Length: 240
Image 1: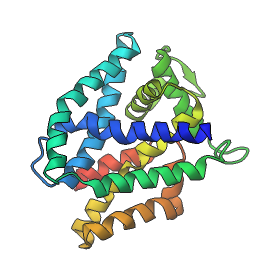
Image 2: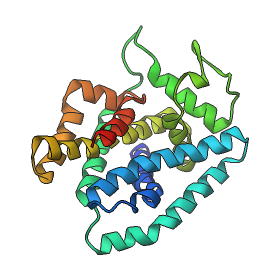
Image 3: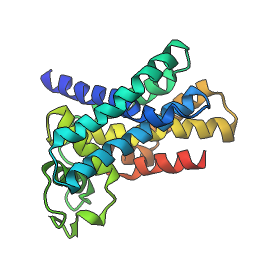
Protein backbone atom coordinates (compact mmCIF):
# COMPACT_ATOMS: atom_id res chain seq x y z
CA UNK A 1 0.00 0.00 0.00
CA UNK A 2 2.83 2.43 0.84
CA UNK A 3 4.33 1.69 -2.58
CA UNK A 4 1.07 2.69 -4.27
CA UNK A 5 1.00 5.94 -2.32
CA UNK A 6 4.58 6.60 -3.43
CA UNK A 7 3.64 6.13 -7.09
CA UNK A 8 0.62 8.38 -6.66
CA UNK A 9 2.77 11.03 -4.98
CA UNK A 10 5.24 11.09 -7.89
CA UNK A 11 2.38 11.27 -10.38
CA UNK A 12 0.75 14.17 -8.50
CA UNK A 13 4.08 15.98 -8.51
CA UNK A 14 4.29 15.63 -12.30
CA UNK A 15 0.63 16.52 -12.92
CA UNK A 16 0.91 19.71 -10.89
CA UNK A 17 4.46 20.87 -11.52
CA UNK A 18 4.80 20.36 -15.27
CA UNK A 19 1.89 22.64 -16.32
CA UNK A 20 2.41 25.12 -13.49
CA UNK A 21 6.13 25.61 -14.13
CA UNK A 22 5.46 26.20 -17.82
CA UNK A 23 2.45 28.50 -17.50
CA UNK A 24 4.72 31.57 -17.40
CA UNK A 25 5.16 31.24 -21.17
CA UNK A 26 1.91 29.52 -22.12
CA UNK A 27 -0.13 32.36 -20.58
CA UNK A 28 1.17 34.63 -23.32
CA UNK A 29 -0.67 32.57 -25.94
CA UNK A 30 -4.04 34.02 -26.89
CA UNK A 31 -5.46 30.80 -28.31
CA UNK A 32 -7.81 28.51 -26.39
CA UNK A 33 -7.00 26.83 -23.11
CA UNK A 34 -6.30 23.47 -24.73
CA UNK A 35 -3.31 24.82 -26.62
CA UNK A 36 -2.11 26.71 -23.56
CA UNK A 37 -2.23 23.56 -21.44
CA UNK A 38 -0.20 21.53 -23.95
CA UNK A 39 2.29 24.39 -24.34
CA UNK A 40 2.52 24.80 -20.56
CA UNK A 41 3.39 21.13 -20.00
CA UNK A 42 6.13 21.09 -22.62
CA UNK A 43 7.47 24.45 -21.45
CA UNK A 44 7.42 23.05 -17.92
CA UNK A 45 9.57 20.09 -18.95
CA UNK A 46 12.02 22.46 -20.64
CA UNK A 47 12.02 24.78 -17.60
CA UNK A 48 12.81 21.93 -15.21
CA UNK A 49 15.61 20.75 -17.48
CA UNK A 50 17.06 24.27 -17.82
CA UNK A 51 17.09 24.76 -14.04
CA UNK A 52 18.77 21.39 -13.53
CA UNK A 53 21.37 22.05 -16.24
CA UNK A 54 22.19 25.41 -14.67
CA UNK A 55 23.00 23.93 -11.27
CA UNK A 56 24.83 21.02 -12.89
CA UNK A 57 27.10 23.19 -15.04
CA UNK A 58 27.96 25.61 -12.24
CA UNK A 59 28.01 22.95 -9.48
CA UNK A 60 25.32 24.73 -7.47
CA UNK A 61 23.12 23.03 -4.85
CA UNK A 62 20.01 21.21 -6.04
CA UNK A 63 17.72 23.31 -3.88
CA UNK A 64 18.59 26.28 -6.07
CA UNK A 65 17.13 24.51 -9.12
CA UNK A 66 13.99 23.82 -7.10
CA UNK A 67 13.86 27.48 -6.06
CA UNK A 68 14.16 28.65 -9.67
CA UNK A 69 11.26 26.43 -10.67
CA UNK A 70 9.36 27.77 -7.67
CA UNK A 71 9.80 31.27 -9.06
CA UNK A 72 8.27 30.25 -12.39
CA UNK A 73 5.33 28.70 -10.53
CA UNK A 74 4.87 31.86 -8.45
CA UNK A 75 4.86 33.98 -11.60
CA UNK A 76 2.22 31.72 -13.12
CA UNK A 77 -0.20 31.23 -10.23
CA UNK A 78 -2.21 34.44 -10.57
CA UNK A 79 -2.93 34.02 -14.28
CA UNK A 80 -3.57 30.29 -13.85
CA UNK A 81 -6.16 30.93 -11.14
CA UNK A 82 -7.80 33.61 -13.32
CA UNK A 83 -7.91 31.15 -16.24
CA UNK A 84 -9.62 28.56 -14.06
CA UNK A 85 -12.16 31.10 -12.77
CA UNK A 86 -13.00 32.15 -16.32
CA UNK A 87 -13.66 28.52 -17.20
CA UNK A 88 -10.88 28.51 -19.80
CA UNK A 89 -8.64 25.85 -18.27
CA UNK A 90 -8.43 22.61 -20.27
CA UNK A 91 -9.54 20.20 -17.57
CA UNK A 92 -10.27 17.53 -20.16
CA UNK A 93 -6.66 17.55 -21.38
CA UNK A 94 -5.29 17.41 -17.82
CA UNK A 95 -7.59 14.57 -16.77
CA UNK A 96 -6.88 12.58 -19.94
CA UNK A 97 -3.11 12.92 -19.50
CA UNK A 98 -3.39 12.11 -15.79
CA UNK A 99 -5.59 9.08 -16.39
CA UNK A 100 -3.35 7.77 -19.18
CA UNK A 101 -0.14 8.14 -17.16
CA UNK A 102 -1.78 6.60 -14.08
CA UNK A 103 -3.01 3.54 -16.01
CA UNK A 104 0.33 3.00 -17.71
CA UNK A 105 2.13 3.38 -14.38
CA UNK A 106 -0.20 0.80 -12.87
CA UNK A 107 0.49 -1.62 -15.72
CA UNK A 108 4.26 -1.33 -15.25
CA UNK A 109 4.28 -1.77 -11.45
CA UNK A 110 4.95 -5.47 -11.96
CA UNK A 111 8.00 -4.84 -14.15
CA UNK A 112 11.40 -5.79 -12.76
CA UNK A 113 13.25 -5.04 -15.98
CA UNK A 114 12.19 -4.19 -19.53
CA UNK A 115 12.55 -7.20 -21.80
CA UNK A 116 14.42 -10.45 -21.35
CA UNK A 117 18.08 -11.34 -21.61
CA UNK A 118 19.82 -9.54 -24.44
CA UNK A 119 17.20 -6.78 -24.55
CA UNK A 120 18.39 -3.24 -25.16
CA UNK A 121 19.14 -1.45 -21.91
CA UNK A 122 18.23 2.16 -22.77
CA UNK A 123 15.68 2.20 -19.94
CA UNK A 124 18.52 1.71 -17.44
CA UNK A 125 20.85 4.06 -19.31
CA UNK A 126 18.47 7.03 -19.05
CA UNK A 127 18.04 6.48 -15.32
CA UNK A 128 21.82 6.55 -14.94
CA UNK A 129 21.97 9.75 -17.01
CA UNK A 130 19.44 11.37 -14.69
CA UNK A 131 21.49 10.28 -11.68
CA UNK A 132 24.58 11.94 -13.17
CA UNK A 133 22.69 15.24 -13.23
CA UNK A 134 21.18 14.66 -9.80
CA UNK A 135 24.48 13.72 -8.15
CA UNK A 136 26.51 16.15 -10.30
CA UNK A 137 28.83 13.47 -11.61
CA UNK A 138 31.52 14.24 -14.20
CA UNK A 139 30.36 14.98 -17.73
CA UNK A 140 32.73 12.21 -18.85
CA UNK A 141 30.93 9.59 -16.75
CA UNK A 142 30.92 6.35 -18.72
CA UNK A 143 27.42 4.98 -19.28
CA UNK A 144 27.92 1.74 -21.15
CA UNK A 145 29.79 2.68 -24.29
CA UNK A 146 28.61 6.31 -24.11
CA UNK A 147 29.26 9.41 -22.03
CA UNK A 148 26.74 12.01 -20.86
CA UNK A 149 26.83 14.33 -23.94
CA UNK A 150 25.97 11.40 -26.24
CA UNK A 151 22.26 12.06 -25.59
CA UNK A 152 20.22 15.24 -25.38
CA UNK A 153 19.81 16.50 -21.80
CA UNK A 154 16.19 17.74 -21.66
CA UNK A 155 14.46 14.52 -20.61
CA UNK A 156 17.13 13.46 -18.13
CA UNK A 157 17.56 16.94 -16.66
CA UNK A 158 13.83 17.31 -16.05
CA UNK A 159 13.64 13.79 -14.60
CA UNK A 160 16.59 14.48 -12.27
CA UNK A 161 14.91 17.53 -10.77
CA UNK A 162 11.61 15.66 -10.39
CA UNK A 163 13.48 12.87 -8.59
CA UNK A 164 14.99 15.45 -6.25
CA UNK A 165 11.61 17.03 -5.55
CA UNK A 166 10.02 13.61 -5.12
CA UNK A 167 12.53 12.72 -2.43
CA UNK A 168 13.84 9.51 -4.03
CA UNK A 169 16.25 8.57 -6.79
CA UNK A 170 15.13 4.93 -7.04
CA UNK A 171 14.32 3.46 -10.42
CA UNK A 172 10.60 2.98 -9.75
CA UNK A 173 10.23 6.75 -9.33
CA UNK A 174 12.14 7.38 -12.55
CA UNK A 175 9.86 4.90 -14.33
CA UNK A 176 6.75 6.82 -13.22
CA UNK A 177 8.32 10.17 -14.15
CA UNK A 178 9.31 8.82 -17.57
CA UNK A 179 5.74 7.71 -18.22
CA UNK A 180 4.38 11.12 -17.19
CA UNK A 181 6.85 12.86 -19.52
CA UNK A 182 6.31 10.53 -22.47
CA UNK A 183 2.51 10.64 -22.26
CA UNK A 184 2.68 14.40 -22.76
CA UNK A 185 2.35 13.50 -26.44
CA UNK A 186 -1.37 12.87 -25.86
CA UNK A 187 -2.54 16.56 -25.79
CA UNK A 188 -0.73 17.72 -28.97
CA UNK A 189 -1.69 14.46 -30.69
CA UNK A 190 -5.36 15.09 -29.91
CA UNK A 191 -5.05 18.69 -31.15
CA UNK A 192 -3.80 17.37 -34.48
CA UNK A 193 -6.72 14.93 -34.62
CA UNK A 194 -9.09 17.87 -34.27
CA UNK A 195 -7.29 19.86 -36.97
CA UNK A 196 -6.50 17.13 -39.48
CA UNK A 197 -9.21 14.50 -38.92
CA UNK A 198 -11.94 17.01 -38.11
CA UNK A 199 -13.16 15.16 -35.01
CA UNK A 200 -14.47 16.99 -31.97
CA UNK A 201 -12.17 17.66 -29.05
CA UNK A 202 -14.34 15.46 -26.85
CA UNK A 203 -13.68 12.59 -29.25
CA UNK A 204 -10.04 13.42 -29.97
CA UNK A 205 -8.87 13.16 -26.36
CA UNK A 206 -10.02 9.56 -25.68
CA UNK A 207 -8.93 8.48 -29.17
CA UNK A 208 -5.43 9.88 -28.60
CA UNK A 209 -5.28 8.26 -25.16
CA UNK A 210 -6.43 4.91 -26.60
CA UNK A 211 -3.77 5.04 -29.31
CA UNK A 212 -1.07 5.87 -26.72
CA UNK A 213 -2.11 2.95 -24.54
CA UNK A 214 -3.46 0.23 -26.83
CA UNK A 215 -1.32 0.44 -29.97
CA UNK A 216 1.74 -1.72 -29.14
CA UNK A 217 4.25 0.71 -30.68
CA UNK A 218 3.03 3.63 -28.57
CA UNK A 219 2.50 1.50 -25.46
CA UNK A 220 6.13 0.40 -25.68
CA UNK A 221 7.49 3.89 -26.17
CA UNK A 222 5.35 5.32 -23.37
CA UNK A 223 6.32 2.70 -20.79
CA UNK A 224 9.93 2.03 -21.80
CA UNK A 225 11.75 4.73 -19.86
CA UNK A 226 13.51 6.53 -22.67
CA UNK A 227 12.99 9.84 -24.40
CA UNK A 228 11.21 9.07 -27.66
CA UNK A 229 7.62 10.11 -27.00
CA UNK A 230 8.54 13.30 -25.14
CA UNK A 231 10.53 14.19 -28.26
CA UNK A 232 7.46 13.32 -30.34
CA UNK A 233 5.43 15.71 -28.18
CA UNK A 234 7.59 18.64 -29.22
CA UNK A 235 7.45 17.54 -32.87
CA UNK A 236 3.65 17.27 -32.84
CA UNK A 237 3.37 20.64 -31.12
CA UNK A 238 5.61 22.21 -33.76
CA UNK A 239 3.52 20.69 -36.56
CA UNK A 240 0.33 22.02 -34.97
